[in-house]
Image (cartoon, rainbow over all chains, first blue to last red):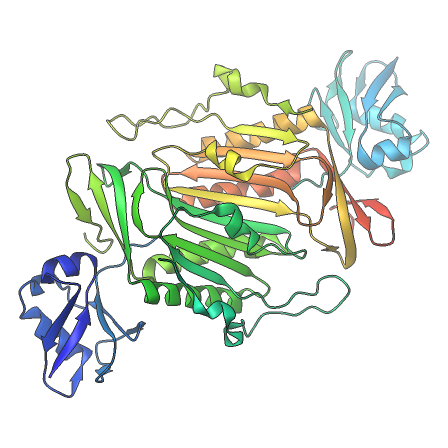
Length: 80
Length: 80
Length: 171
Length: 171
């Protein structure tokens, strides 16, 4: 399966898109998605523990991803 | 001699004027002026240590008063 | 397009912990925080009006503005980008957490996105309360938490013409 | 009549401790605090403009408003009275003390006098700085000191028709 992932700011620049499809095995947790993304062109920008949101709420790396979840991998935030 | 004293708010109400002349002996310190004011009608409103300004700056009760000083005896402040 | 917070019309978004004081004065319905990500300049008086109430004696505001210098580099402007729906949800969560911790607080927040020039306001946080200490504590708390949790990014424009996404976690 | 602070035109009123950072950006003349006692409604955007500068990244505001309840009594309005020239001098001293303690702070303060209705602003303190912590510390410090030292009084109007000078030192 593959998971559509929303990207923003420096991550969108690095991965070359604001929405990419990441191939993963199923079932899959956030950590598995991040591992797969590290293999992609641009994956070097990801820090040790990237921020991830599922359905517009923060989750930790052990959180499972379900089909249909809105997944966003989020660069260091700099609001304010 | 007598000293013109500026009054405001509740003190102006109590002493019946925004500027009163207070008879004192010369030379005179702030404490002497306050003692004299306690004898006047309205003097009961003065607390133990009333606030006093000379020439628009705060002074303590031992401060001497010179002829020509702008003297204000000041109710508890409530700005803001 | 302004993506206005949908919480505003939902009764479920009322702050559960807010106080209702009985009496002829001081009757105060719990205030629903107002939050928005906006693309046009923030109207500060309009935002203040959102927390006004006859029971409010103190309003604290925090305004973040674009300055011309960051980490020693001359800045000419900033692009702000947001994960817009989540950013607004997260602002709403932060505002409601503040309202739960600070009974009677009234909060309004707008964060601007797009390209801002030096001197323009990127964020305005307004907190109203009967008393000043809780109002000031609320703005301070909200700006700190906002900078940790709201998915918004900024790309600085330098005098050299270069642009760079700011990474507050970088050494 | 507005009794405008005469300090504004006097070079001697420049803050002695303020920093001047050299460089193509970040050049910042020491800011002369603006303070005034005013009789008309306070224009908050105009007051904010007095601390704006390309080097300012954070503006903190404190707004004191007339509320409808004090010490359990329903209030319909407040008369503010000032010992006007001294009040303005004292505001200026407080602002300059803040500027000496907080290098680079830019301060503007207006206190209104006369009769105010519920909801109207009696005091607005604005502090601008490159960074948010000093800006917020300045407004907090200034409002606390102002309430101790500035010769201003308020007479509350109650629903009953009675009016009473407020004495914060009363038990």
